[in-house]
Length: 146
Image (tube, helix red, strand yellow):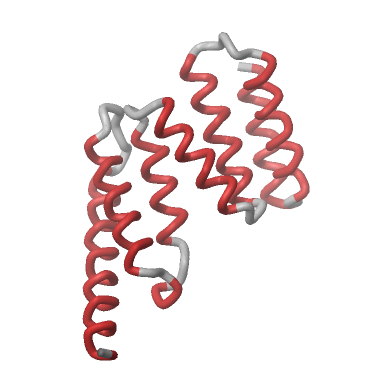
């Protein structure tokens, strides 16, 4: 409980001062290193916190790598799929490639099919619908260019 409380405090401070994301990142990595035999639930949470901090620091490639590793290590965790998909869908519509759109849709679908549960599966379904519309727009604009 103490470790989670400290992480929460760092996350709260980071909302006002982004330098605390770096401190949070270091803290969460240290927790995972110092307590490798901790319950999976704790390690999973702290690895999510690492990826979230990397995202907030603008280190998107590292964040995506962390989510990919989480998916490999915890394939039943729907949140890793969702957050990785979110990292693609954050871009502006005209910045996403068709491959990125397809990847995000697949990840959202995997989030819905994972053994764990999402709080609002309909929100993920809505994101899939939105991305599929964007993908159709990309496909039709590419066809017009030819």
